[in-house]
Length: 298
Image: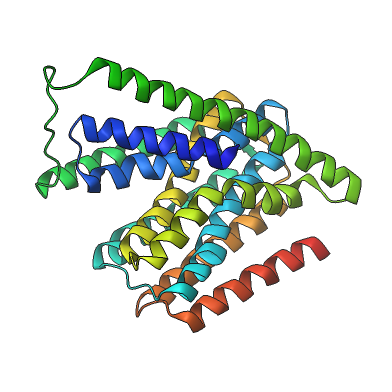
């Protein structure tokens, strides 16, 4: 349901953007990044509303770790990745800085509405600069007019968006409930389930899209999707979640998870400087499964 909901959301949002005359670059930086983070938002919000703060936060952190290790490593096995200078100089450092900011904000064991306002304000600034950068590069040329836009088509695409949101919400609720029951059955902590099962489940859209893009040798599309999703997970997913329902948790294990997330982001960024080939991809995969083994063991 999460995967189908994400597909409905992204596909219909893409069609709407096309009808309104948005450029493919602007679409990829905004709609696709938001769309592939929609499962994380749905499941994180569902967990928070049920009072399961550890699962909610673990989903965001675990998804970010999976994106820059598991998904990135698998993509490199299919086709070597060579990022643009812009990705190396702007998006990747920004992703790392956001990780450090989250580490600071979560150090007291509470993420409330003040932190939510900060994250959502940064999200608005991020989107504003994306639009401005694309517009300055003359790559956004809206062509839709009130005369050319067909209302029935807009209604159909809008209905598709609602179907996607419904599937995401229902799938997220089932995923969170099933994950918590599994945790109790096998004696695992909700933190571990959030970092592993829930995080992997909500990363399916990124994984599927990345593998297809790797097969087509679209390095910048892959990195834009993964890095953009990590940024959206912190700013949008976590920002919206803690605005609706503040999270309280034991700070020490969360600090460890955030340190690991930042470390994976730094390693991935260093690997990408001279290109990410199959050997480095295998190292990322090995590091990810080693991390999974450790949190399951300890």
